[in-house]
Image (cartoon, rainbow, N blue to C red; front, side, top):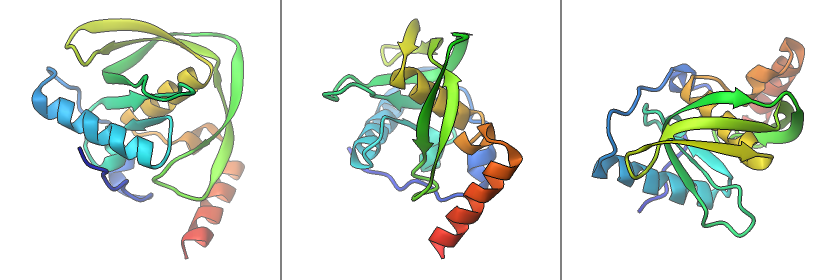
Length: 165
């Protein structure tokens, strides 16, 4: 479909909670298609609709090695998170050029409305789980660096401002 522009931090939409999706329509499928094209062009392992300025609870994730196993989600919610943590370097196309090591649960069970329009529950592990949690954060108006201490977050944002100027 089309590669969309990721809105730059600190656009206030990145801090807003996205609206739930009532039903899966051709319009929703077209947004997902654009999101997949945008994710692949980065390249990344996930993208949430607010990152491209669409304020709906839509996310796509593909952490497979060979790609082509994308999961389309509407209204995703975490039902269960493992107690075992996993650290991973996370970044965002909304704040290019910087990253931070974030610890998140190694596995999550997520309920979401699938591209077929049915409620689905699915377990995600490893990078899949990290990406799903990262996207759900975006849908709730949070950024990955919100998981850092205030000092580390301030340092990261200073680096981002310096890189952008």
